[in-house]
Length: 273
Image (tube, rainbow, N blue to C red; front, side, top):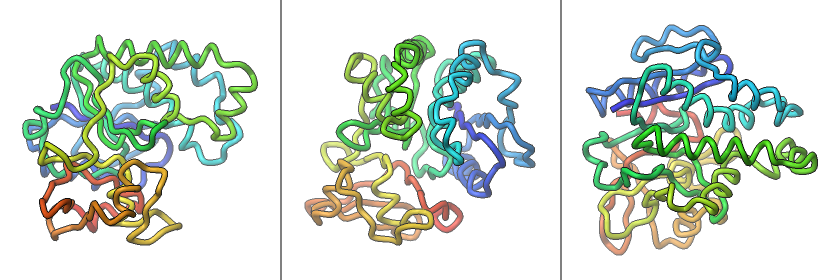
């Protein structure tokens, strides 16, 4: 399976552990990392973003959304929707997995195929109005092209007031994706993030925050009640834990394995296989 990752700016150490984990868990994977800085990472095909950027992506860049932000995270999170398309087109990639680069996987693609809809963008919901790249599977460029077209169209219909909302973080790419989802539900498959009929669940962010904390703010045991999964964790019904090798969730006296862990604390090395 193809794994596509994007990073803007100097490459932090945790990206190396994200990539090494993919190599460890999904041995036959092909990993592409789109960057705009120097790197000595050897386990992935490194791609200079300037070499793949399309004219459409340039248009979005020139909108200067989030231009007031010192931290470019919000801008990069939005732009990677377009960078991913450009990268896949450049390398003739038909299907791929993508997630934030502070994510660790614990199951290979072949073990997860039954969870995916091969006619839709498969992605993790975070809250009732946000979708997040905790884990996503894109089954075809035809499907993804429709998603990117919808995001592009939305951005260029924004009023000046709405653009200011983007700059102030009232809007972000997670809410924007949810807006596109509400208008195009036939293009999305929301991955299972709570214990249920499947033995495997996906972590949008909530399980990783509870098990590893968040960078510079919260320690282990943190839950965000705005999160769909966070609310269930804080209620005590869903109990995440790490069994030395991989993360699990206990619910109704049953064990469920997590396919991935979104490590907001950036302590990926500590939880790597």
